[in-house]
Length: 151
Image 1 (cartoon, one colour):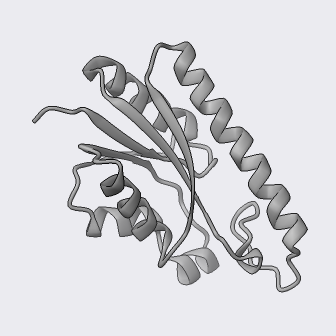
Image 2 (cartoon, rainbow, N blue to C red):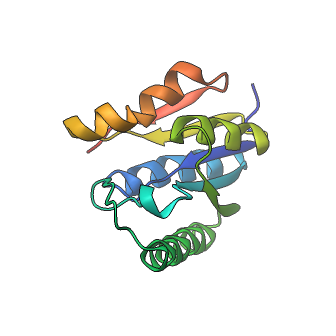
């Protein structure tokens, strides 16, 4: 199997450096294009805080400010990858059905030969509400997945 396109999902959790280090190294070694995606909740009431929270009074202004911060972070990640000589593009994608489904759809859209994701340990409430995004991707993806554990 030849790897020409790699998708890497980032959520700005602790494992982001590990995910991008591994995805970037693989892209560099195979001369693949690296597509970095951050999936975000499109509704201000699903605003993702630290960790995910669902404040009933989330304002559109707060949501937009968070999206602007995330866009800047994705842009900075791609610039860093470029300085390492890695062909990379960054994307912000709104969540559709679920984070997992959105990540898988993105990987298919990019024609990814490999999907790199990280794991984190969600708290009890987050796991009940969201489930584990990583688990969802693992169980539903038809694209080979490399899971980077939390350091």
